[in-house]
Structures are given as structure tokens and as C-alpha cells.
Length: 227
Ligand code: ADP
Ligand code: ADP
Image (tube, rainbow, N blue to C red):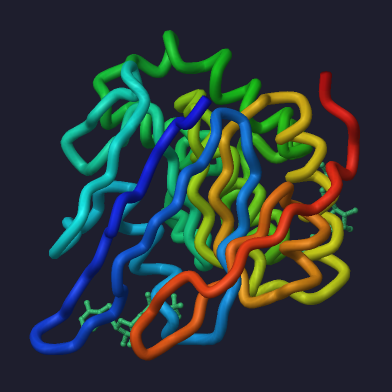
């Protein structure tokens, strides 16, 4: 069933139309990629879905029960950006704990969930490390753990691996696909890599620029069968 539906969602900045009327339905548990050239409005679309900015026209309809937070749909929807944006003076565990701390959860209450999130991304042994001790790929894994620690239903990812070398990116793609199979998130993944979109997603939504809009959609055979 649909988890989120965009109906004629548009966004203008001043006199410029960044997005012209997006119609998009994302099903529960679906992995959907948004691909298209720079400036076609992928990030803008993702930020609208996250509730980080408001559409200038159209509406976004969520399935009942998807929690609304103060900064958008913070509780059920997690966002991963291209830069890992870790706090450099905080250890790995403290970076992952941050979203729970912001919700007022004590360190003791959060400990198991922080450990679980680090284990999911293969960084259990780096619990006490500082970000500067980690490679680029490992930092991105920490950022993913920080998104996962809230146990979101929806993962919004904006070119999360774009700054990484190809080998690291391939590894993280493998890991993300495995996690998606295990965790049954709904994922909306922005990339300018058609390769990545074909590898990861069940459905590819192709966008074009000036003005930003959807021009095509393709279904991809599921890489691994899910019951
Ligand atoms: P993409 O993620 O596909 O590269 P963006 O969503 O970042 O595209 O941008 C789409 C268009 O909207 C671009 O023309 C961009 O310059 C414009 N845009 C995005 N954010 C803003 C903003 N805050 N103010 C003005 N223009 C913006
Ligand atoms: P990148 O993804 O940036 O290439 P890697 O994740 O491959 O970095 O890790 C860089 C180095 O850290 C490698 O030597 C790797 O063996 C080591 N490393 C990465 N993850 C772990 C882990 N979970 N446990 C132990 N060593 C790790």
C-alpha cells in the first residue's frame, strides 16, 4: 500500500520554478531511486518529502501512523546527506547516540540501540573511535548508523555515496541492499548514477531539468527475492 503520495507537488524559489508538479507514489517497503542531471530538483524533492521545506503547490500525503516531528517527520523518517556531517570532537558512539539524545533518551537507555546500529553497519569495533580515525567509507557508515538508530520506517538518502571512491561505494551499495532486505525500510534514494539506481532500486524515477519534473519511470527486477 502507498506510504507516501506526492500530488502535483511544485516548488518555486522566487520567480524560478525548481519543481513543476511532481506526481509520485512510494509503496511501503519500496526502494525507489530518483535520477537525473544536476539541478533537476532531486534534492528539492527529497527535502519536501522530509518536511524540511514546504511545497509551493500540491500536497504530500502520508499513510496514517507515520509520525510527524518538529523538524519534518523526524521520528519515522531519517535523512542521510552526501556529507557524513559527524561531530569531530565526539566519539563514534556519541555521534550515533545524538538523535536519541535530542529526544531526551538517557545514555543508558540508548546504549543497546547505539550498539545495534553500529553492528548493522559493521563498525561495532569502532565504538570509541573519533571520526578523524576513520576512512571516508567508515564515516559514511557512521552517518548511516546515526540514521538507523531511531529505527525509521523511511530512509531518505541524498547522494550518500557520491563523494566516495568507486570501491568503497560498491561495498556500501552491497551493504545498503543487504540492510534493506533485512530491515524492510522504504527508501527514497537520490543519485546521478544510473548504475547505482539499477543496482539498488526496484523502481527508477527519471527527472529532467528546467523545470524539474518526472519524465519517465522504470521498474527493475528485484535483485534478491523478498517474500
Ligand atoms: P538536484 O538535486 O537535482 O541537483 P536541486 O534540487 O538541488 O537539484 O535544485 C533544483 C533547482 O532549484 C536548481 O535550479 C537549484 O538552483 C534551485 N534551488 C534549489 N534550492 C534552492 C534555494 N534554496 N534557493 C534558490 N534556488 C534553489
Ligand atoms: P573504505 O570503505 O573507506 O574503503 P573500509 O571500510 O574499507 O574503508 O575500511 C578502511 C580500513 O579499515 C580497512 O583497512 C578495513 O579493513 C578497516 N575496517 C573497516 N571496517 C572495519 C571493521 N568493521 N572492523 C575492522 N576493520 C575495519
